[in-house]
Amino acid sequence: MNPNNKKSLLVWDLPVRLFHWLLVLALAGLWFTGEQGDDWLTWHFYLGYFVLGLILFRILWGVFGTRYALFKQFIVSPIKAISSIRQQQDSPGHTPLGGYMALLLMLAVLLQAISGLFTSDEIFTDGPWRSALSAEYQDLADWAHHNLFTLIQIAAAIHIAAAFYYLLFRKNNLIMAMINGKKMIDEEQSIASSKLWLALVMLLIAAAIFYVLITLAPEASLDDYY
Ligand code: HEM
Ligand code: HEM
Image (cartoon, rainbow, N blue to C red):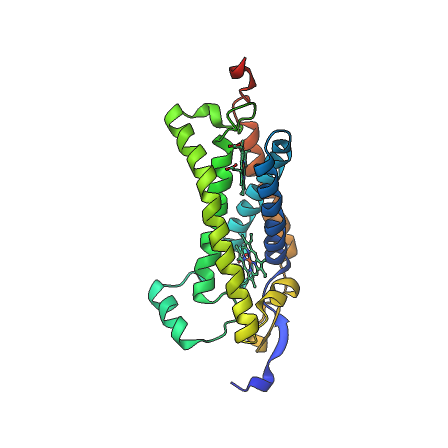
């Protein structure tokens, strides 16, 4: 293929980009509010619900969204992923390894948010679903909520280091692509639009699932402490 045919064209739709940067901001807020505890936990809950909604949306978008957002597009066989390390080929969407990292981060954040629904600061504040669990599973949720975050921190650090490796050593600015959505590619590799109407429908479905999840929760068990 003639490299001169390449133009700066859309690969990451707006919903994927918004999802990414809102996730980064929300996780920073969750870290801060989670460590502060006490009254900050109110904001921690709101941000946690927001992230849960974001991930629900991203799961739907991974099935119905645009070309490079689809799970089937970026989750390839492990053999292909390993051989791609040697080929050092740039790809319009996620690289095979980048795809696995994206999946790991999404899964870890999802589990972290779910465990939050069942955890407690052991003083005043319980996640909304905590009382639905036996003591044994409550301990498991506490353990997960404390330890999964370490996994997220390590994975995010590797992920950010990889983005800078591409920028500095491969002269490939993936970070800018996650901001403006564009990469230097051939015309037929580009996506036509961000499918914003479909994204809105997915957002409403994610919000509805989320609403049911929270309104069905048993009463918060503040009284247990008195
Ligand atoms: C808490 C920190 C972060 C988390 C949890 C995170 C998570 C993710 C996820 C889940 C994706 C996949 C996006 C999708 O397919 O919808 C992704 C992609 C990406 N992220 Fe992050 N990210 C974080 C921080 C950052 C930062 C600080 C940068 C920039 C320095 C960055 C640069 C990128 C890039 C360039 C991609 C696209 C990778 C590719 O082309 O394969 N991320 N990130
Ligand atoms: C991805 C989303 C979330 C992240 C990244 C996160 C992160 C954290 C962090 C870093 C802490 C401090 C843990 C420690 O001191 O060891 C914390 C504590 C806590 N989180 Fe979350 N959280 C999330 C979602 C949620 C949700 C959805 C809820 C409930 C609705 C929740 C409820 C709590 C509670 C009750 C604590 C206090 C635990 C304690 O003090 O030991 N979290 N969270």
